[in-house]
Image 1 (cartoon, rainbow, N blue to C red):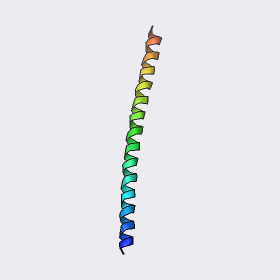
Image 2: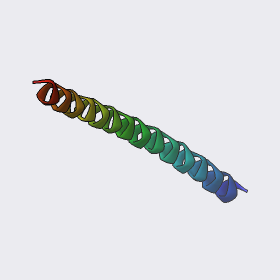
Image 3: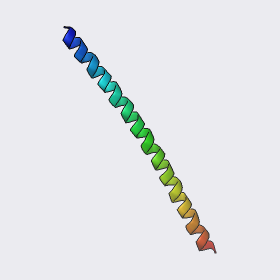
Length: 53
């Protein structure tokens, strides 16, 4: 029973670590997406400025 308990504890720890990693990855992609959107908006503003000249 001790071995089973240890394996369950290890599996639980692994799941927690995977969850933490997934949250970090999601956060990182959201930051990257935010920067890409800002760059797209900046490019659009430049095009609009050039067109109005």
